[in-house]
Amino acid sequence: MCAQPAAPDDPTAGGRVVLDARDIARALTRISHEILERNKGGADLVLLGIPSRGVPLAQRIAERLAAVEGIEVPVGSLDVTMYRDDLRLKPARALLPTQIPPGGIDGRTVVLVDDVLFSGRTIRAALDALGDIGRPRAVRLAVLVDRGHRELPIRADFVGKNLPTSLVERVSVRLEGVDDLDAVTITGPPPGRSDQTGGTEVGA
Image (cartoon, rainbow, N blue to C red; front, side, top):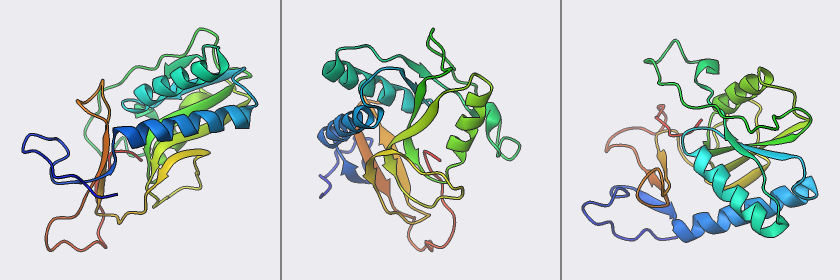
């Protein structure tokens, strides 16, 4: 897909748009149908978004599940800040909400929802956090973007888009409700920077 020229005040300026609003909507619809097919319906499902953008993604998926199945799938949020293995290596992070639906997660299929899957360390932290909350029957992972470069043996069950990247490229996800538009962009390295060095990333 070709990126459209960005207006000067467009937050996608300087990046190549790889998913626009329609692409994101289609990806979430497909993920929703795949979840229902894998689970054989919406019974006993719980969606937990990883803040911050995993939460609105989980809510959008729940809306699609309800439209197809006619049932309300519980949605919550799972903050993983205190479970990250890089907590001592980076500045202090603000704690974000963990909200578990009233029915809990014991014996249910939990679908973790995140925006970008990168190293896998965020998801490892999420699994540790889940272990302190309850014992689900199964845990699945849905991500809008899988950009590769895994450092742990973690794989998503449901993926909106597989997006091969170099380590110095930055993948940015913007969602209405958190940002002012729906878009996924890639920003390349500064001029003269080798793509053999490490980079920063929105999701992990």
